[in-house]
Length: 229
Ligand code: ADP
Ligand code: MG
Image 1 (tube, rainbow, N blue to C red):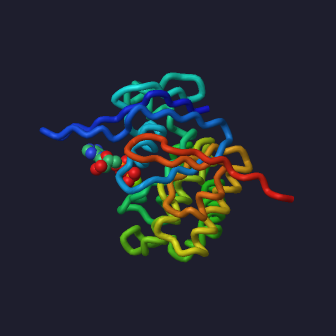
Image 2 (cartoon, rainbow, N blue to C red):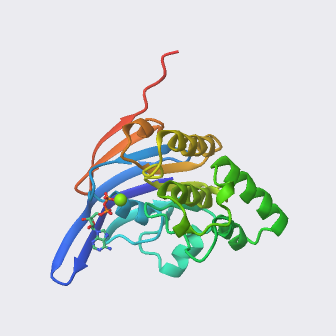
C-alpha cells in the first residue's frame, strides 16, 4: 500500500522557488490500478518520481508497504526499488549504446537470471510488442512509438509488483496503445499495482480509479463505474 500525506515538493533554482506539489494526499491500495490526469506542468511526473523513489519530497510523509521512505538515502532507495518497481519513463531513458534486445534484457541481468531464461523472456516480450524485427537496432534508429514500446517492455519484463507508467501510450497510435494497455491490464489482473499518468481519457478508463491533479494537488477522484450486466 502507498500512503502519501501532506506531500510537498519545492524546486529551487538560483532565485526562483516553485512549489510543484502542495500538501498532496493519496492512498493507493495494493493491486489497485490508478490513472492520473491533469494539465501539463501540474506535477504528475514529479509525483511519479517520488513514488518511484527516484526523487525525495521536500516535506510530508510517504509510507510504502508500511515503511516511511520519504527521506531514504539514495543508496537505500536503489535497494528498495530493485525488482519491486517497474518504471516507464515519459522520456523513455533507453541506453543509446545498447540494442533493443540488450536494453530489454538489462533488468534480467541485474536480477542475475541465467542466459537461456533471459533469451526466452526477451524473445516473448519483443514478439508481444511487435519489435522483434528491431532487435539489433539502437534507440536512435527507432521511431518514437518503437522506443516507447521498448521502454514498456524493459519496465515490465521482471513482472514488478508496482508499475509506474508516465504516459506509456503518449507516442503510440490507437492500435499500439491498446496492445500496451492490454499488457498492463494483464499485469494488473496478475496482482500488480499500477499508477499511470495519461492524457488519454479513453485509456484512463481502464483504471479502477481516476485522480485529477491541478497545481500540485488532487482536485478530484472518480471510481470506475460498475458494469451494467
Ligand atoms: P507534468 O508531468 O505534470 O507535466 P512535472 O512534474 O514534470 O509536470 O513538472 C511540474 C513543474 O515542476 C513544472 O513547472 C516543471 O518545470 C517543474 N520541474 C520539474 N522538475 C524540475 C526540476 N528538476 N527543477 C526545477 N523545476 C522542475
Ligand atoms: Mg510529465
